[in-house]
Image (cartoon, rainbow, N blue to C red):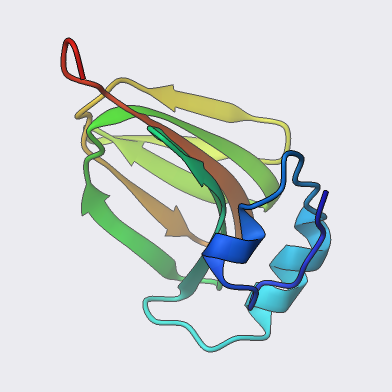
Length: 128
């Protein structure tokens, strides 16, 4: 079990059988760090095809249009974000989760400061 700070190297951070993360504390730590594009991120956990990450956004932050080679879930943690999926804008607030099929183009906009938890489950080729 670990609640280590954001600066712990991934090899150490992911070495425990149970990882407990205080998302509010981690978000506060990330907000104190400089960031490009109005957002910062920290991978919370990565194992095999699964990645879990926390993103914090400043007002007017942007995670430009992109795709993931796997299923994506985006859960609002605080503030309010906009998730643009194939031209349609969805509001992401605390308690709201958006799930995207593999390969769906999307971007994240922050009209106000906000935070989200992202999970990506990469697709595995047959037999892979």
